[in-house]
Image (cartoon, rainbow, N blue to C red; front, side):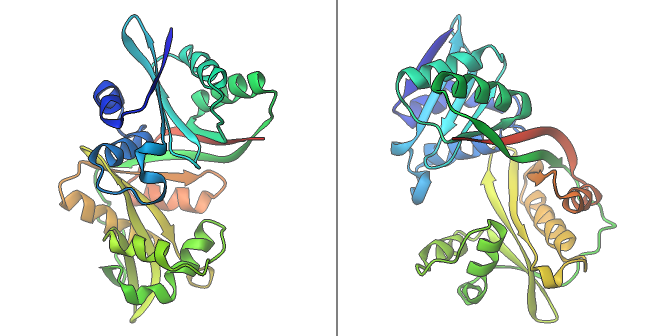
Length: 278
């Protein structure tokens, strides 16, 4: 098997796009990021492909594995042959490319973590056990509570606190990262009785599917159906715009969210792991 690194995102796109499109739902993260880099319309933060690590593993001229890392985030990958995972790990180690962790389909993530950490004499631990879901039609019986709208500058009074609570982070003094999320026009707010109660975001747009994420309701407003409503609203919006399906990741440690999404119409595709190296 042959390991190859790329320094041009357009060349990388040309070699791997069709491979990734063979399983669009499972490849939401890597495929969505690749499209962002290829289009070159957004180089904010990690989105500048000049800083990316792009790699393939081929056998007989056929691409068996595609890997993409957008520092400082973990490497993501897709493989049609798990034997290619060790070749990827060896290639990265031999070129002294540091990898903080991996997010991938469960068996691929485990195989890569074992191969890479063994070669580097490192340890690894699971950060999140996730499940990937796909929706093709919103359950019409799900109540759509409140008013659903795009976020605006006025929402910056609370959005920094909500987004950081969602990601277990701390609100910084720089407001620009939060203003950036609003400026994209992909972050949506659900209001009830004139008050913001929940948010959700369109994360990655692909050829046929779109990612949904950043679903958050403040703790003091939970249990009232707001999360179900905002996800139903944003999912229907995406379908109405012509996307064939919506994709989202859930934390398997949160049975409530997994139950909510299935009631809306999301069906499980596969399990995914986020593994950190140290």
